[in-house]
Image (cartoon, rainbow, N blue to C red; front, top):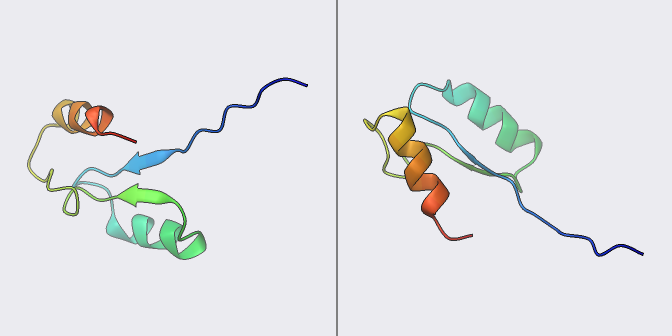
Length: 59
């Protein structure tokens, strides 16, 4: 039997993403790790900077 690697998927929404989308995703499955730009204190940053910050986070 092969060794299984378990990975968790994390989503980072930028400030332009419709908040209704985030709310509906989390309503359907509250266990999804989905952060908004406001919660992550990333509002106002360019998309590339947001990705770089998010990718460097532990987890």
